[in-house]
Image (tube, rainbow, N blue to C red; front, side, top):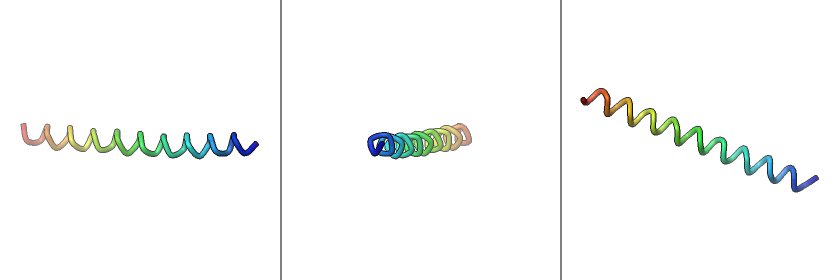
Length: 36
């Protein structure tokens, strides 16, 4: 059971990191589009 919980925590952390990365990429693209 505890392994499943650890896996859930890891997946949650990865999901948050992916969301942050995507948000950062979108912000950079948006700002670079403004300059063009």
